[in-house]
Image 1: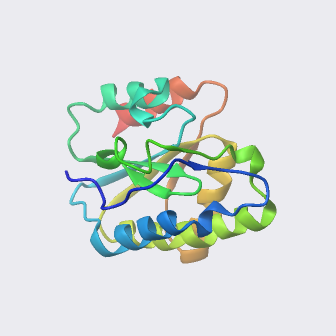
Image 2 (image 1 turned 45 degrees about the vertical axis):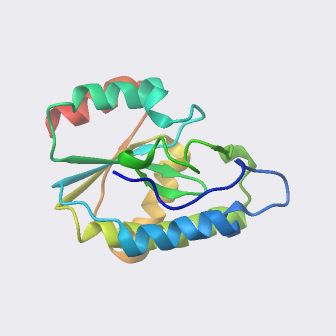
Length: 174
């Protein structure tokens, strides 16, 4: 799959800078809403990771390994500020070139994250029969709020202390 037509410098969170308003990030939102299509039955949401691209992180490696024969699963990473990143774009700019530690997010930015993510979740809800999520507390809360805002049912699973086991158990059940 071809990368989105985006280019620029790394996108790094700094105090007082709202990356949800970054021009490249906004172009991503528009591109996703206008162009993204998936015909896979299940959307599976994982959190973004500090390791870029995500497929080099231990949690994503595990998930992709378990699901290698399950071609009906569409993986997305829930990301601040990128919102949803399909697996197919993980190696593309800007998803391979940003840093936004959740600890730096203000309450206003959390609310903005919920509002913007709800739009993308609504879009993918029409493309998949089910949406399943395995997320740590921060992303779990954001996704829960966003799905409630637009009335979308998401099968939510908290990471808990055993993230690998939770991811493994949920994927094996699909």
